[in-house]
Image: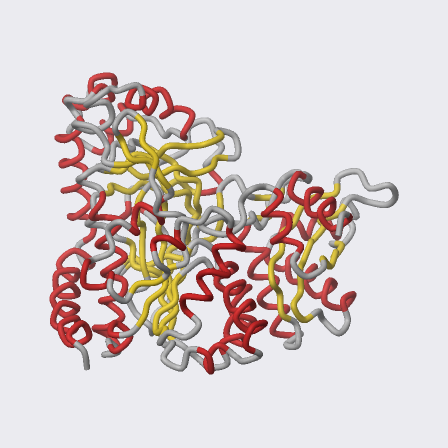
Length: 500
C-alpha cells in the first residue's frame, strides 16, 4: 500500500468522528451558523439595508430577509464587480463562480475565503466517509480523473471568475495532484470533443482507479474509449473501483454506464452547487445524501406546492417532513441571503438528515394544470425500464404539445435510446400508465380526456450531444433539463435531428 492509502484511514476516522458531533445534533449546528452569519453580515451593505444588526431570532430573520433569486441579488453583485467591498460579505469574494441562468443570462455566484472550505472539504469528506466505511483506500495510490470545466480563470475587479469545477481544480490537495488527470494543458481546452480526445490520449494507458463527473459526460468518455479499443472499461482500466458523480439523477444512466464498465464498482453521489456544497453520500448502505448542517450554510426549505404562493412558509431543518418535496433556500458565508438555488429535495431520514435531489422548482410541466415534476418522470421511466430490461436510455426530456395538428394535447417524451425497447408502443403505454399512478392530476387529465396518452419520439444516437453543442453547452457541468413547460428544448432537438 502507498503512503496516500495508508494515511487516509486515520484521517477518515478523524473526519467521521468529528462529523458525528453535528450530524445527530443538526438543529444546534444550524442555530450556531445563523448567529455567525448575522455577525458576519451586519456590517455589509446588504446587512445595513436589511438591518441585520437588529435580528436575533429566526422569525426576525425571515421578516428582515426575503427569499430571493439571482435577479434580486444582482444589484449587489454588480456593486462588487464595479469594485465595491463589504457588499454581501466582509471584504471581497475570492472568486465568482460563473454559471448560466435561463432568464438571467450569465450569473456570478460569490465564493469567499470563508466559504471555500465548504466546497473543498465537503468533496474531500465524501471520499473519506467512503474510505472509513469500506476500508477501500487503494484507489488513492493510482490515477484519478475529474471530468470538469476548464480551470482557466478570468478576472474582473481583481476577482477570479470561472466555472465552479474549474475553481475547485485549483484547490485539489497537493498530495493528490501528482496522480490527478487530465493535465492542466488538456483541461483548459474549450472545445469539449477535442478535449475529450486529449483526455483519452492521457488516460487510456494509465491505472485509473477513480473517475468522477456528471454521468452523461462520463458515458461519452466511456463510449469513445470503447470505440478506440473495442473493450469494456473494466479491461481498459482494471483498477477502476470508485465512481463519483453528481448534478443529475443517476438512475436513468445507471444500466448503460455499468454495462459499459462491465463490472460493478462502488459509487459516491455528491450534491455540489455553485451556491454551496449541500450534501454527499456518507454511506453505501442507506438511502439518501447527508445534509451538511455544519458547513457555513443556514438552510431553509419551502414546500414545493407552496413555493409560488404569495407568502410561502419558510421552514428550518427541524420542521421538514419525510417524503415531501421542498425547494432549498440557503444563507451562507459567501454572502447569499435567502437565496433560492432552484433545486427541490425530499428527505428520506431525519436521524441523521438525509435527502434525495428530486428536480428543479421551475422545471415542471403544468401546461394543463398537471404539475408533473422531475422526480415523477424519472421514477416512471426507471420503473418501466425494469419491465423492459433490454432497454437502455442515453438521455431524455419531456415537453407539452399544447396545440397538435389533430387530436388532443399530450406530453411528448423525446428519448435517445442506446438500446430501444422491443415494443416502443408498449413501452410508451407503460410509462404513461406509471405516470398516472404517480401524479393524480395527470391521471385526471388522461381519464377526463383532456390529454391523450404521451407520445414517444425516439431520437437518433448523438442527438442530445449535437443539441448541446449547438447551444455551446457540450461537456463540463452542463445538463439537459428533464422537463420544460414550453417547447424550446424539444423543438431545438427536433431541428437538430432534421439537419442530420
